[in-house]
Length: 273
Image: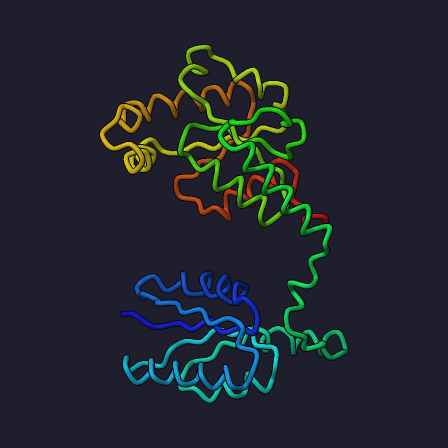
């Protein structure tokens, strides 16, 4: 079964899209085709969306599913004329909050983006630049400024995790590869040894690692299962010896990995209570 899902917003639609992913993932036997329609901020655009939804319903014989974060009640009312199942995220949460707080919301478009201060935005940009310049151990100067340094074998998920931490949380995350020379020496690279308290290890099952490496270098020693088993075992031995906390990325999403890193390294700024 395949169902079409429209993500409709007067902004970027990223909030509704993220929420929809979480909800729809609970229905594993259904295939969902998602269509994001951002910046629906006028009645004219709303009418155009209604036509798209109705055309989809007629073609497929099923009501499309619509996730929306529309703020304008006028625009929302027009979109709701379409033949679809509507899941209004703002309506579900804003109205109970208004009742609880004893006040009306501002119903202003784009408030979630405007709430980010220029300082917060600048910190995120700086963190992204830092993570890019300290990717894969390519620039060791400035590691003292890192909030966390991810270590692990090549292709275990260090780079995407570093960038996600920077983009979402403004965390200056560097990453450094553990390579066969380190295993032969039986010690952490001298460049990161002084920052042991900032290290967090990522590991991965060898069988998954060989699949990932084959995509990059097919039929190479680098991608062989034997080499992957050796590197993973040695990397984990090094990290255990030095007391570095570690996490297997094999079955974890970037979001799950990043959340664990924030908690383990003490960077979770939202855990005061």
